[in-house]
Length: 119
Image (cartoon, rainbow, N blue to C red; front, side, top):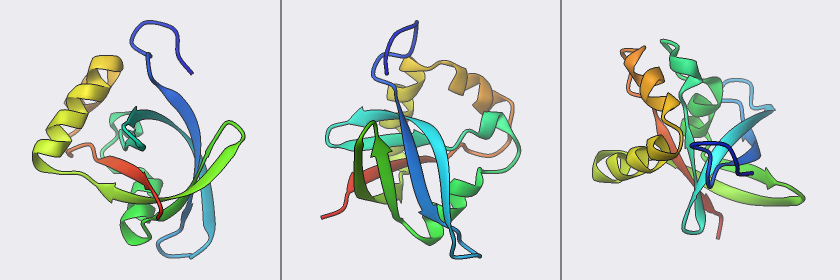
């Protein structure tokens, strides 16, 4: 899914994660950006004061299913930190500057996750 200013490389995915408390499967549609063979997703939650539920679910249960178009594959999520986070933050904010506004509107550090194909 590309087009429009600042959206190059962005795609829509359906992420299915396991609830951290319930153990039930939860689906959410997210934007993702490719980084090699993995995907980067941003837990912005529109700059709200708390992380989205899916981010907490991935921290508790990193295995998830990603659907891109007609393809579905298992992935393992990992929250990124340090220099890797800085590089990926620059990548996604260059393509979608609204994330900078979201970060400015909250005291929390917006989490970034990479979704790596399960091997």
